[in-house]
Image (cartoon, rainbow, N blue to C red; front, top):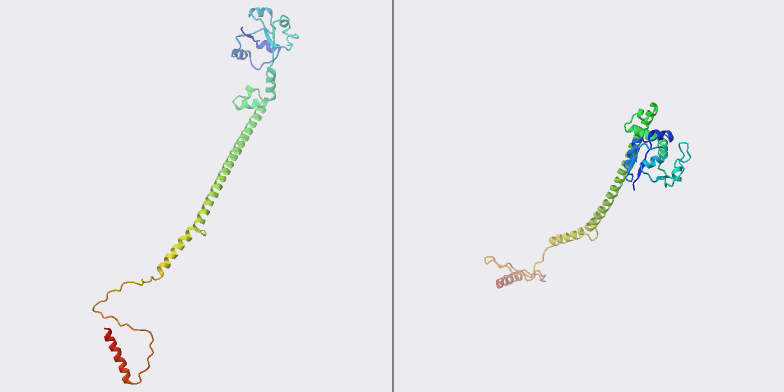
Length: 264
Protein backbone atom coordinates (compact mmCIF):
# COMPACT_ATOMS: atom_id res chain seq x y z
CA UNK A 1 0.00 0.00 0.00
CA UNK A 2 1.38 3.39 -0.98
CA UNK A 3 0.28 6.90 -0.07
CA UNK A 4 0.60 9.53 -2.84
CA UNK A 5 -0.37 13.14 -1.96
CA UNK A 6 -1.47 15.59 -4.64
CA UNK A 7 -0.69 19.31 -4.17
CA UNK A 8 -2.23 22.14 -6.17
CA UNK A 9 -0.10 24.95 -7.57
CA UNK A 10 -0.10 28.50 -6.28
CA UNK A 11 -2.08 29.72 -9.30
CA UNK A 12 -5.00 27.37 -8.69
CA UNK A 13 -4.94 27.87 -4.92
CA UNK A 14 -4.92 31.67 -5.20
CA UNK A 15 -7.71 31.50 -7.75
CA UNK A 16 -10.12 29.17 -5.94
CA UNK A 17 -9.17 29.50 -2.27
CA UNK A 18 -7.05 32.55 -1.57
CA UNK A 19 -3.54 33.75 -0.88
CA UNK A 20 -1.35 31.17 0.83
CA UNK A 21 1.16 31.60 3.66
CA UNK A 22 3.59 29.08 2.12
CA UNK A 23 4.32 28.95 -1.59
CA UNK A 24 3.99 25.77 -3.61
CA UNK A 25 7.70 24.84 -3.37
CA UNK A 26 7.58 25.08 0.42
CA UNK A 27 4.42 22.98 0.53
CA UNK A 28 5.96 20.32 -1.71
CA UNK A 29 9.06 20.18 0.50
CA UNK A 30 7.02 19.99 3.71
CA UNK A 31 5.11 16.96 2.42
CA UNK A 32 8.27 15.31 1.10
CA UNK A 33 9.64 15.24 4.67
CA UNK A 34 6.54 13.50 6.04
CA UNK A 35 7.46 9.87 6.72
CA UNK A 36 4.00 8.54 5.82
CA UNK A 37 4.02 10.11 2.34
CA UNK A 38 5.39 7.90 -0.43
CA UNK A 39 4.97 10.31 -3.33
CA UNK A 40 4.21 14.03 -3.83
CA UNK A 41 2.18 14.75 -6.94
CA UNK A 42 2.87 18.32 -7.99
CA UNK A 43 0.56 20.71 -9.82
CA UNK A 44 -2.51 18.56 -9.19
CA UNK A 45 -5.91 19.61 -10.64
CA UNK A 46 -8.40 21.35 -8.36
CA UNK A 47 -11.03 18.72 -9.13
CA UNK A 48 -9.81 15.12 -9.33
CA UNK A 49 -10.85 13.68 -12.65
CA UNK A 50 -11.08 9.94 -13.43
CA UNK A 51 -8.19 10.34 -15.85
CA UNK A 52 -5.98 11.80 -13.11
CA UNK A 53 -6.90 8.98 -10.72
CA UNK A 54 -6.18 6.32 -13.33
CA UNK A 55 -2.88 7.94 -14.35
CA UNK A 56 -1.51 7.90 -10.80
CA UNK A 57 -3.19 4.60 -9.89
CA UNK A 58 -5.20 6.12 -7.05
CA UNK A 59 -7.80 3.77 -5.57
CA UNK A 60 -9.06 5.90 -2.70
CA UNK A 61 -9.17 9.65 -1.96
CA UNK A 62 -8.86 10.73 1.67
CA UNK A 63 -10.32 14.04 2.84
CA UNK A 64 -12.51 15.30 5.66
CA UNK A 65 -16.18 14.50 5.29
CA UNK A 66 -17.41 18.11 5.33
CA UNK A 67 -18.69 19.13 1.87
CA UNK A 68 -15.98 21.19 0.20
CA UNK A 69 -17.66 23.83 -1.92
CA UNK A 70 -15.37 25.34 -4.54
CA UNK A 71 -15.04 25.99 -8.27
CA UNK A 72 -18.81 26.44 -8.69
CA UNK A 73 -19.63 23.12 -7.00
CA UNK A 74 -21.31 22.36 -3.71
CA UNK A 75 -18.85 19.53 -3.07
CA UNK A 76 -15.85 18.86 -5.35
CA UNK A 77 -15.59 15.31 -3.92
CA UNK A 78 -19.23 14.40 -4.63
CA UNK A 79 -18.50 12.19 -7.66
CA UNK A 80 -15.73 10.37 -5.75
CA UNK A 81 -18.06 9.70 -2.82
CA UNK A 82 -20.68 8.38 -5.26
CA UNK A 83 -18.04 6.08 -6.81
CA UNK A 84 -17.19 4.62 -3.38
CA UNK A 85 -13.60 5.80 -3.51
CA UNK A 86 -13.83 8.33 -0.69
CA UNK A 87 -12.18 7.77 2.76
CA UNK A 88 -13.26 10.37 5.36
CA UNK A 89 -10.66 11.77 7.75
CA UNK A 90 -10.94 13.81 10.94
CA UNK A 91 -9.66 17.37 11.15
CA UNK A 92 -7.31 18.33 14.00
CA UNK A 93 -9.00 21.15 15.85
CA UNK A 94 -7.02 24.40 15.74
CA UNK A 95 -4.67 23.32 12.94
CA UNK A 96 -5.61 24.81 9.60
CA UNK A 97 -4.40 27.51 7.25
CA UNK A 98 -7.25 29.79 8.26
CA UNK A 99 -6.44 29.44 11.97
CA UNK A 100 -2.76 30.21 11.36
CA UNK A 101 -3.60 33.32 9.32
CA UNK A 102 -6.01 34.46 12.03
CA UNK A 103 -3.30 34.24 14.67
CA UNK A 104 -0.84 36.15 12.49
CA UNK A 105 -3.36 38.94 11.79
CA UNK A 106 -4.38 39.14 15.45
CA UNK A 107 -0.78 39.38 16.69
CA UNK A 108 0.54 41.32 13.73
CA UNK A 109 2.27 44.01 15.83
CA UNK A 110 4.08 41.39 17.90
CA UNK A 111 5.42 39.56 14.85
CA UNK A 112 6.35 42.81 13.09
CA UNK A 113 8.30 44.05 16.14
CA UNK A 114 10.01 40.67 16.53
CA UNK A 115 11.15 40.57 12.90
CA UNK A 116 12.35 44.18 13.02
CA UNK A 117 14.41 43.27 16.08
CA UNK A 118 15.84 40.26 14.22
CA UNK A 119 17.12 42.39 11.36
CA UNK A 120 14.30 42.50 8.82
CA UNK A 121 13.73 45.86 7.13
CA UNK A 122 10.49 47.79 7.18
CA UNK A 123 10.27 47.35 3.40
CA UNK A 124 10.49 43.56 3.69
CA UNK A 125 7.72 43.61 6.29
CA UNK A 126 5.65 46.16 4.35
CA UNK A 127 5.61 48.44 7.40
CA UNK A 128 5.21 52.20 7.08
CA UNK A 129 7.83 54.66 8.35
CA UNK A 130 5.68 55.77 11.30
CA UNK A 131 4.87 52.20 12.34
CA UNK A 132 8.53 51.24 12.05
CA UNK A 133 9.52 54.00 14.50
CA UNK A 134 6.66 53.02 16.80
CA UNK A 135 7.67 49.37 16.80
CA UNK A 136 11.34 50.18 17.42
CA UNK A 137 10.40 52.47 20.33
CA UNK A 138 8.23 49.72 21.81
CA UNK A 139 11.15 47.31 21.47
CA UNK A 140 13.38 49.72 23.42
CA UNK A 141 10.71 50.04 26.12
CA UNK A 142 10.48 46.25 26.36
CA UNK A 143 14.26 46.02 26.70
CA UNK A 144 14.20 48.53 29.56
CA UNK A 145 11.39 46.59 31.23
CA UNK A 146 13.39 43.40 30.90
CA UNK A 147 16.45 45.06 32.44
CA UNK A 148 14.38 46.41 35.32
CA UNK A 149 12.87 42.97 35.82
CA UNK A 150 16.33 41.38 35.88
CA UNK A 151 17.53 43.98 38.40
CA UNK A 152 14.50 43.30 40.60
CA UNK A 153 15.09 39.55 40.47
CA UNK A 154 18.77 40.01 41.30
CA UNK A 155 17.86 42.36 44.14
CA UNK A 156 15.44 39.79 45.53
CA UNK A 157 18.11 37.10 45.30
CA UNK A 158 20.60 39.39 47.07
CA UNK A 159 18.10 40.20 49.83
CA UNK A 160 17.31 36.51 50.27
CA UNK A 161 21.02 35.69 50.51
CA UNK A 162 21.57 38.48 53.05
CA UNK A 163 18.64 37.22 55.11
CA UNK A 164 19.99 33.67 55.03
CA UNK A 165 23.47 34.83 56.04
CA UNK A 166 22.01 37.07 58.76
CA UNK A 167 20.06 34.14 60.13
CA UNK A 168 23.22 32.01 60.12
CA UNK A 169 25.23 34.78 61.79
CA UNK A 170 22.58 35.29 64.48
CA UNK A 171 22.44 31.55 65.12
CA UNK A 172 26.23 31.32 65.36
CA UNK A 173 26.30 34.38 67.64
CA UNK A 174 23.73 32.77 69.93
CA UNK A 175 25.75 29.57 70.05
CA UNK A 176 28.96 31.48 70.83
CA UNK A 177 27.14 33.56 73.47
CA UNK A 178 25.85 30.45 75.22
CA UNK A 179 29.33 28.95 75.09
CA UNK A 180 30.90 32.16 76.46
CA UNK A 181 28.35 32.40 79.30
CA UNK A 182 28.88 28.74 80.18
CA UNK A 183 32.65 29.18 80.26
CA UNK A 184 32.30 32.37 82.36
CA UNK A 185 30.06 30.65 84.90
CA UNK A 186 32.36 27.65 85.02
CA UNK A 187 35.29 29.95 85.79
CA UNK A 188 33.72 32.72 87.93
CA UNK A 189 30.53 31.08 89.22
CA UNK A 190 29.77 30.27 92.89
CA UNK A 191 31.54 26.92 92.58
CA UNK A 192 33.83 27.96 89.76
CA UNK A 193 37.47 27.16 89.24
CA UNK A 194 38.52 30.72 90.12
CA UNK A 195 37.01 30.44 93.61
CA UNK A 196 38.70 27.10 94.25
CA UNK A 197 42.03 28.46 93.05
CA UNK A 198 41.62 31.56 95.26
CA UNK A 199 40.86 29.41 98.30
CA UNK A 200 43.90 27.22 97.66
CA UNK A 201 46.18 30.24 97.32
CA UNK A 202 44.70 31.85 100.46
CA UNK A 203 45.33 28.71 102.50
CA UNK A 204 48.91 28.55 101.22
CA UNK A 205 49.52 32.18 102.18
CA UNK A 206 48.10 31.60 105.67
CA UNK A 207 50.34 28.59 106.15
CA UNK A 208 53.36 30.60 105.00
CA UNK A 209 52.60 33.52 107.34
CA UNK A 210 51.81 31.47 110.50
CA UNK A 211 54.97 30.43 112.65
CA UNK A 212 55.85 26.79 112.93
CA UNK A 213 55.86 25.23 116.46
CA UNK A 214 59.05 23.40 117.45
CA UNK A 215 58.61 19.74 118.39
CA UNK A 216 58.42 18.87 122.12
CA UNK A 217 61.09 16.16 122.14
CA UNK A 218 63.67 18.02 120.11
CA UNK A 219 67.30 16.92 120.67
CA UNK A 220 69.43 19.20 122.80
CA UNK A 221 72.21 20.86 120.94
CA UNK A 222 75.68 20.03 122.26
CA UNK A 223 77.21 22.70 124.33
CA UNK A 224 80.61 24.03 123.61
CA UNK A 225 83.15 22.97 126.34
CA UNK A 226 84.73 26.39 126.37
CA UNK A 227 81.47 28.08 127.22
CA UNK A 228 80.09 27.68 130.71
CA UNK A 229 76.42 26.88 131.10
CA UNK A 230 74.21 29.80 131.76
CA UNK A 231 72.79 29.98 135.19
CA UNK A 232 69.32 28.89 135.80
CA UNK A 233 67.14 31.45 137.42
CA UNK A 234 63.89 30.77 139.04
CA UNK A 235 61.31 33.36 138.18
CA UNK A 236 58.86 32.24 140.78
CA UNK A 237 58.35 34.86 143.42
CA UNK A 238 59.81 33.96 146.80
CA UNK A 239 58.77 35.73 149.91
CA UNK A 240 61.79 36.88 151.70
CA UNK A 241 61.88 39.04 154.63
CA UNK A 242 64.30 41.91 154.61
CA UNK A 243 67.42 41.32 156.64
CA UNK A 244 67.22 42.67 160.02
CA UNK A 245 70.87 43.47 160.12
CA UNK A 246 73.89 43.73 157.84
CA UNK A 247 75.18 40.45 159.16
CA UNK A 248 72.05 38.61 158.07
CA UNK A 249 72.33 40.16 154.56
CA UNK A 250 75.88 39.03 154.15
CA UNK A 251 74.91 35.57 155.35
CA UNK A 252 72.25 35.25 152.65
CA UNK A 253 74.65 36.36 149.95
CA UNK A 254 77.15 33.82 151.24
CA UNK A 255 74.62 31.04 151.11
CA UNK A 256 73.71 32.01 147.55
CA UNK A 257 77.28 31.84 146.41
CA UNK A 258 77.73 28.47 148.08
CA UNK A 259 74.74 27.15 146.29
CA UNK A 260 76.23 28.19 142.99
CA UNK A 261 79.44 26.41 143.77
CA UNK A 262 77.54 23.25 144.62
CA UNK A 263 75.81 23.36 141.21
CA UNK A 264 79.08 23.65 139.44
